[in-house]
Every structure is written in C-alpha cells, then in structure tokens.
Amino acid sequence: MKGKPQYTLADLIAGLDVSLQGDPNCLITGVATIQDAEAGHVSFLTNSLYRKYLATTRASAVILSGKDAEHCGVNAIISPNPYYTYAKIAGYFEQADARKPGIHPSAVLGENVKIDPTARIAANCVIGNDVSIAAHAEIGAGSILGDHVSVGESAKLDAHVTIYHHVTIGKRTCIASGVVIGSDGFGFANQKGVWHKVPQLGSVEIGDDVDIGANTSIDRGAIENTIIRNGVKLDNQIQIGHNVVIGENTIIAGCAGIAGSTVIGKNCMIGGRTNIIGHITICDNAMITATTGVEKSITEPGMYSSGVVGAVPTLEFKKNNVRFHQLGKLVERVRTLEKILKKEEKE
Image (tube, rainbow, N blue to C red):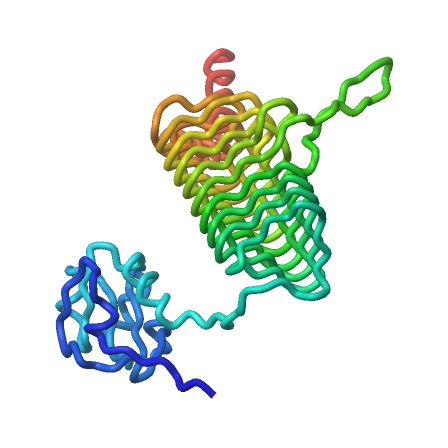
C-alpha cells in the first residue's frame, strides 16, 4: 500500500507568488479547515468569519493574506490570492486512482474510430462511427458518444455522460456524470394549434479547459452551433438552450437557465438560479447575482440583480428593495395623512 504523501512547505510553494513566514522544512501531510486542522495539515483563511480561529488553530501552516499574517502563530504562507494558492497546494493531495490507458473489453466501438493509445475507454462505453479521441483522454464507464464526435487531448468524461453526434470537446475539458451535450434544442412551430418539431441542424462546440458540472444540459444549435468557449466553468444542473454562446472564462452557478440564442460575454459571473431570456446579449465582465431574472440585454459591465422587476444595477436594486420593505409603514403614513386632510377639510 502506498504511503501517505508528505511535502515540505518549500516543496508546496515552489513556483508560487507567495512568501513564507516560518520553517520551510515543515512537513505537510494533508489539508483541513482552519478550525479542525491538526499538526501536519495546511489550511487557509479567506473569509473574515473564520479569522477568530487563527489564534487557536492547530494547523502546521495557514495560507492567508499579508494583513492576517501578523496574527498567525504558526507557519504562514502569505499570498496576494490565498484561495488560488490553496487550490494549487491542495492539488498535491488530491486522491485520484491511477488509471491505465486502454479500451475495456465491454466497450462497443463503431466504424472508423480513432482512439489514441494513451486514452482510456472504461467499461460499457458506446462509441459511434467516425469518433476521434485524443491522447490521454478518459471516457468514463457507461458513457455514450454519438457519430462524428471529437474529444480533445486530456479531456475527461466521468461515468454516464452522453455526447450526441458531431459535438466537439476541447483539450483538458472535464465533464461530470449525467451531463448531456448536443440533445435537440427546444424548437417547435405552431400550425393551427398543433406544435410541430423544428429540426435542430447545428451542433455544440466545447472549448479547452472547460468544466461542466453534473446533470447539466447543453442543447445543439438550430442552424449554427451552440458554443462554450475556452475556460468556461459551469456548475451542476444548468440548462443552456440552442445557439447560446458563452464567452471565455465566464462562470455560472447551479440551476441557472439560459434560453436560446443568448450571447454571454467574457469573464462574467452568473449566480445560481439565474434565468436569462433568449435573444439578448450580456456584455463582458457582468456579474449577475443569484436568482436574478434577466429580461433585456446588459450593455455595461457591473453587478446586476432583480426582485419584483427585471435586472437593474445592484445599487439601484438594493435601494428599491429597502423601499419595498418600507411599504407597510408608508401605507400607514399615507392613511394617517389622509385622515388629517379630511379632518382639516371638514373644519
């Protein structure tokens, strides 16, 4: 059995934009939260709510900002971005089974399939005709790839992923279980009260370094392709309609719904349960808070929220929200004023 991994602090911070306050030879065997850590653990502090644990933590080292370092009684890894630094260090302790390349005997392969010798095809996969799977890619157990699918180098599909025909998956993209990519978009034409299906002739392009969470669905385009560009991060249970385009490095939280033909810019942050109407544009660097309903295009970078009405700048929303909660008192004041006015009129 392989022993528990351990690294010195010097090993863990090599190449990172950080400074070390403490012993570079301190051995680290794992990661833990700042309140539950024991000797040998490295932890991190990014949320001020957990600053109270800094004085009593039993961790061997804590990743934190410069302003918190003076209050740290153990080894301190001082970083301009502690959460990012934690992500890089935690990677040393990520437990992943070593998986050998090759094709499981139970996999079903179509005609003219090209699979790199370093790729891995797990049990009970079904691979269609003219599929291309690049070097070091992994296709999880029970996954289905339709005809003419292309999977890029080092892409990883977990178990039970369904990729429809002609979909392209980029390099190093990770797709979680239950994801469906390339199913028909929601297109129906009404003729005399009866709905008739509109053929969905496009496909889906997934860029490089994309992460797609469990049970997310991405519809194929009606004519042109649905496009998810490089670096996009999608949470679980997101619905993306046909012909949607999502720009580079945009991140979307769980249960969001994006209707067809919406174009979302680069570096956007979209909160969970946000619903975006179709055929609109959201500019680069927009931040949309959770549960927002977006009913018109957003053309200026900034933070947007909604409540009773559609999305407005967050500051305006907060003011309106305060006024909304004051309505009860306002109604009583109006009634009191009306009584006073009526009394004065009689007099």
